[in-house]
Image (tube, rainbow, N blue to C red):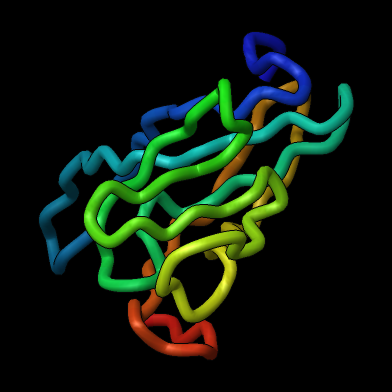
Length: 117
């Protein structure tokens, strides 16, 4: 967690193990992490809440921007432009022994309520 800069969203890969019956497969998912203080981190799903596109961080504008339909979000994940129906989806996190642990979840796009799928 020490490599996350304070106040600047950073894209990271989350490596997790997916178990299906007897098979275990490593899966890699992207996340956006925003370290707010030395001990507080907010993690966002990388999926726009409008139609499920991937978004990016525009450091100059201090906004998350989705290139598909123009949705924009502030660093707190709040919608500040475009058709997104709700804020960015936050993922549950825990900091343990200096390591950031993230519980990856996926949510239905295009709805005003956060619905886990």
